[in-house]
Length: 378
Ligand SMILES: *Cc1c(COP(=O)(O)O)cnc(C)c1O
Figure 1: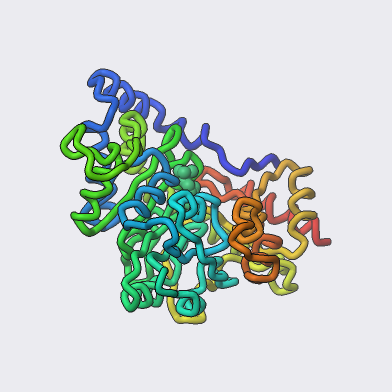
Figure 2: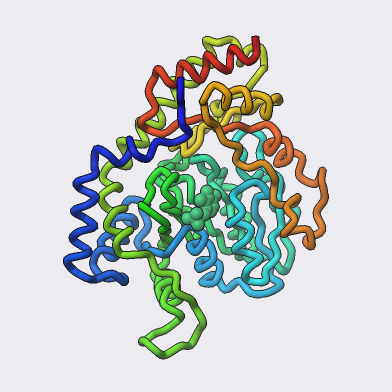
């Protein structure tokens, strides 16, 4: 059975009229740059994320960059983060002349291992960027504790985690100083193009981000600091606001799909035979369970590349997030890392495979995915 990685057409078709009328309303208003559509979305995202403030920006990448700028990150500063994420996480640090300091991941959650952070804190460390990978929060309590002890800013890369919750109910983006979201079309809440958002609890930091978003001008044409054009597009803001009403329903569908995969894989016997491992039991050893929103459903399979090719032949599309950890990327060679420095990130890069998990995925499709994986192993 043909199973795509994502089906945006099926995703948008039921709300097509509503989306087009939201776009038309912006057109009627001719308020294309910031304005009411952006303000309304910011209010709703701030409420949804349980932060007092939200500032719309052009992308998740810009959300990270502007947060680091607002945090005062300067050339030579060190910023601790994971080596296993989308390139934007570390790219934003280097673009400001700062130095990313990588810390290996936890092999079960794929998120930064908090136990390894304290050892790399120096007098130059200014911030930590935990990434809530695949839709599940990093273990924030020990991260926040280290940050407090050393006066470090915490910038959550929550691009894959809108609506995800820590085990105590706090939402992604509300635990650190800044929460960064992406509305790239493949994220759980996607625009019809590029867009992003920064959320904050501190009104002063929010004000700083707002000023940086418009070239650092306040009042207009008066510049104490240099910013950039980081604005979210008003049409995209109107689209996202419509889609936000559906987000919880889509999240539930993703979670149901995840549950179904887990049941099907357990029935298949592949888990018992240790042919693959599932994204469950995460943090269970620590007695907690975070509210996972399954931006991705990622299995670990030592024979990953052969399995992926096999599934592609059967028209089942999967993806590898991410095949090369940061410390082995050519663009970060000058940082001086080498193969073997972060064994868990390297192992994850070689063994993880993301299966289709989008809300519109049918149970027949899921059965077909699991059957084909069984067929591969038999
Ligand atoms: C998608 C993503 C980003 C970047 O978001 P864009 O909107 O594409 O710029 C950053 N970090 C992570 C972890 C992401 O998944």
